Image (tube, rainbow, N blue to C red):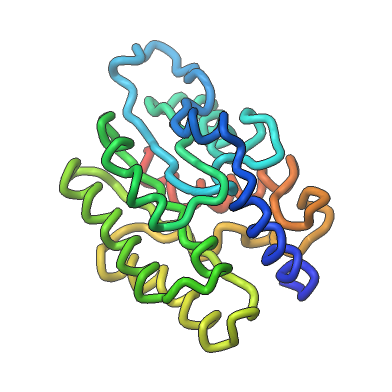
Length: 227
């Protein structure tokens, strides 16, 4: 990922964090699209819940273009009995996630995709705090739904906070995945981050084409779980 991408990412995340769309927060849980699974009643559908920040919410895009909706389309095309719920909120940190996870878990879930931490890293939050919060979220999900399948979406940050911080931040995700025996997406924005053709004008958030690649990255981790 190039330096321009990282600098833009650092600046925009501060703006995004301070200017969250209120309606987006008020509607932080939404079904990605109406499932179209042949011969399967909605009562029998299992639930995949995406819990994250602006990358999950689909910042700057129509909800139907965000990767959770593209995952729903993939599921429907394969006639799999799952519905997708997008619980992404722009500007969300791991602490913010901790503040709303209990409310989110009021609804039964079968697969939980955790995409948080990027905003922590960009703000220089201590790594121990980020890891502790992610672990706490995982613990709450497992405690509420012991049979749930969890997927952790890895993230990388620019070296604004120093190379040591950046390197150690990257290590949080594989370490948590290993410690908790959960599936890992090594880097959510693999093949997208830093490519102007695949990002919006801000140079940070994926555009429609970029979202398709992000969805492929996510599906690689989900495909065996959903079949």
